[in-house]
Image (cartoon, rainbow, N blue to C red; front, side, top):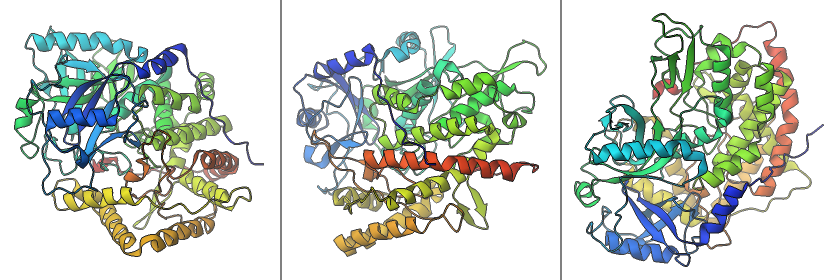
Length: 595
């Protein structure tokens, strides 16, 4: 029997209501250019997007018609009521207005009328949730004023810095969004894109991993997994990297380079999980990290981002505490192949305890989504749908009696020959999508693809396809496929759009939960405009090697889809139990080793 459609509740406390009530009053927003620099702007209640663009024209000395203000999924054409106090807004190029050059956006003068004369560190989207980081930010700002410099971190692919307090102790790790892999100011040579384009994972955009770091902290209820306190900040320091290709003048004109970054409390530890054998780790510690990773579909949980703290103070390997870090590749915009290193650990095969089952049972994906909407209003709806789906999957699987290893294996893809096959979770979603299409109560109309959005992608491909970088091979096939499709779409016009959507429907109806080849591409389509006159940016992300996407579903379709999804889970769990009975757990090699 199919389960009833999942209902997403809406809960708000008085704190959120007060914040919404203040949205029409004075606000401070942070406009970040696609090359990385950030500018704080004060808004009155009557200011709109045109007001902001006029101020930016004064500060940056560029024609405003060549640029778009983007806030999460929306292009801000006029109304700014959706933009919360302290929110970052991306200023990106509008390719409907071509220009022969790409000017570097840096203020004409630090004394410009709308220049940013703020403190060296500011918390974005201020909230009671980040009260523990306020003192940390205060200590860092005081140390900066005293001339205590941060220390660059040599490891990793992106730019990261240890910030210190007045005693010279490391207290925070700061990761500027424009120094991520592929980003314009990456200090380690991994460049070639601007903010908002697909990054290391095609469904995680460049410049948005910092949001996900904060999201993991917000979703770690009761500090179950012990994610260190994390927040978003606008921060200024001369140590930050600005590549020559962006402009050396930015460092001078931006008052030592204002950037938006994630800031996470530094955790003193003895080593990470890759330095020693993992068999002695507490079962409960592995379980709590695994529960979080499943909920947020962490695509890069390896032993190197699990810190280990000794609790007994002995030199030998005794009682330890595990601390998970580096969550920038969680909550993708579509179902991705996760990497769960703990899937191979013996602790993951131990059944959940009563307390763990109670914790999982009390998880509310609708409430979690609302937390992220309120605390991180720039987060994309597709990411929240991934959170909802994976949390439902975890709750149902744990209730059925599956262990963490079995849950992780159902979410992980396999390779047959040279072909990557959908995971069992993706196969269930494909079947649910098929049922949605075949439902007698649902007759979806053909939706046309937003030509403006495709124009945006075409120009990005033209500008950056020739720029070499050390990580380009990891997305080369994905970009080539997208380019071929867009060219074909250009030639075919409206006829091609109808044929493409029709082909998608036929492909879905041919799917069966029992097998064949589930490999197919889902089209990204426009979900319409908002009542405020700001059009959707859901379609901006090119298609990737995703078997299942959710951004093209309306809210009504999404609700029906979840009902079908839940109805298919029980039989899938029975198959897993029968298949695993008496068999040894299989080992899989994930994709994290590529990065």
